[in-house]
Image (cartoon, rainbow, N blue to C red):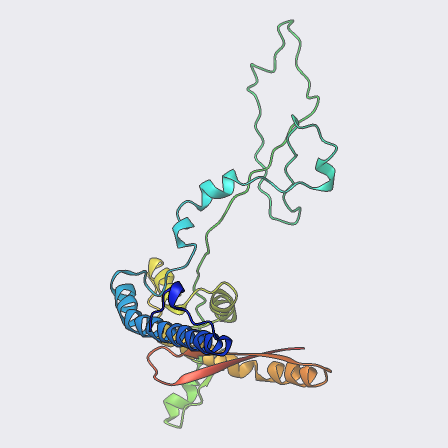
Length: 269
């Protein structure tokens, strides 16, 4: 019931009753509005999901994927970190580049002037006073080579002529079947688990060298290598159990081409 200010009763108890009914009505309306908002959100969620699946970025995208192609420009515009030695240096003087590691293999190329230029204008011969050197960093792409194991086989010709059973001897097999070497396995494992390079991309890299190395084969090598690391895993496990406190992070992940959901458990002492 809508009351005008002139029609309000003068009875205090009646006014209190009207105020209580009005507050209850407002609370009921607020509750109804909240429920309507939730209903609207539930209706909008499938629409937003459909829009995201149709027009949104793919699952392999990254928040910073847009910076993938202009990384050089962005990095160049960033100011270099100043060290304690740079504080006393004049702003006009650029910081000196750090020398390259001394243990790297070095190829020394000497640049000399011609014999005619070593003659002074006065007619005398120029003598060597000193030399200036500058360092350039050279990158050599990965080199792949084949190790061919040749096993010599021997037999007794005398036994062959006598018709007896020939005695054949041969060197044992130096390595298990397959063409994987420790250096190849270490490269595959390091690229996958340290530098996050999936096996299908490594498969593409080997194709550039003309080598057909399927990801199924590499996966089999990974599993067999993991079995060889089992003793090391057991030692690390025993070391963790000796710690006073252990932290665990359980992150679920879905295995590719598998409906099962597996859990990844990380422990650190």
